[in-house]
Amino acid sequence: MEKHRMLVIDDDPIVSQVMQMLFETELQLTCKVTGEEGLKAVAEEKPEIVLLDIEMEGMDGYEACRRIRQLDLPFQPYVIFVSAHSDPVKRLAAYSVGGEDFVSKPLQPEELVRKVEQALRYRREIHELKSQARGAMSVAMSAMTDSSALGICLQYFRRLFQAVDSGQLMRTTLDALREFGLAASVQFRDNGEVKTLSSESGNSQLESLLLQDLSAERQRIVCYDSRCAFNYGPVSLLINNMPVDDIERCGKLKDYLALMAEGAAERAEVMIQDGAAGQGQAGATLAAMIESQRTAQADARALLDAMRARMEDMLGNEPRAALLLGLVDEAQDSLGKLQLRQMRELESLGRRLRGVALRE
Image (tube, rainbow, N blue to C red; front, side, top):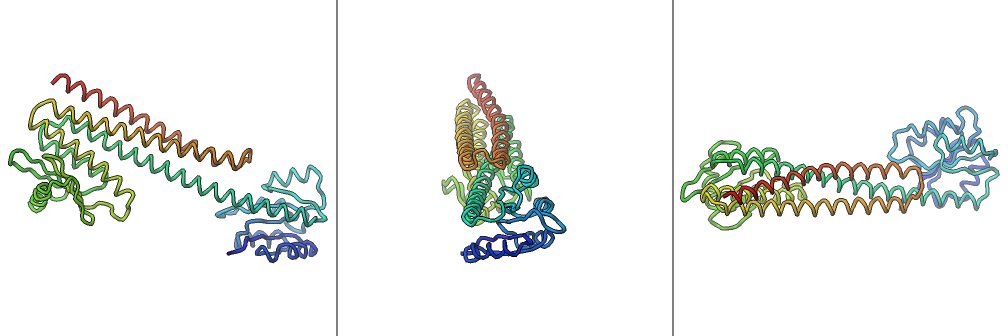
């Protein structure tokens, strides 16, 4: 296992000897005697802990710490200041430039070992917390991406139920698929009459025959490599460029595309039958979308709430916790606003559909 890295910046050779005696077998230890050398070592070696003397010739410890905090590092080191003078003013100055801890000379081995162990434990907790924060943000971003996809579906359903003929239905469907970045064909079948429209080549005879053959198999979803067909009643979709390399996105897209194909089929049935039954089915599909969205909202918020509770438990009143907690709050706020707006639009569309069904 790779050793933890510690850098000692101190011009007192006795300090370096004490540090080597205490930590050389446990840590990867580097010793420098000036602030300039220490700053260079921090940039190159990226230590996890820096033991930093205050009184040094040239660049003192305060300036060295200021410059360390300005370095673009994956993780900032835990800085422990060392000084023969431990008056409150020096301690306050050490903390104000970015120090996390302070020890007085002459060094007490037991205290120093305890301070270093505490620093390593703090580093582990910070690493774990940041990893969890990234995970929470990833989930939040995924949920927001899902909301964006749901927004495309919502807009599609709104336009779909305004379509008055098969041509408009197919064009509306291709427009929505294009927003997902998908190249596709749509087929509409009505009592032996078959119409096919492709986003790439207009009317493709080959794709028309393929969709007819696939629809005859009576399988809802048929996939091969990057091609995927969705067959619902009189409507079929053929997607030519499913993102099969991104398993998660591909799986979610299949769910959305199945909803869209089902909605297109229900609207097509209304056109064919000119009755209210299809509108009732469309309302049921929309209700399923609303319930799915509510479940997704609850899951995302529960995860973010758990993440916040974990941060508070680990860091307590630690000032750095505020930044990470702020990230979670920001994600929750953005996600909540976006999803609330979409839920209202979905419910509004549902009320309109029910009204249409009652009138018919």
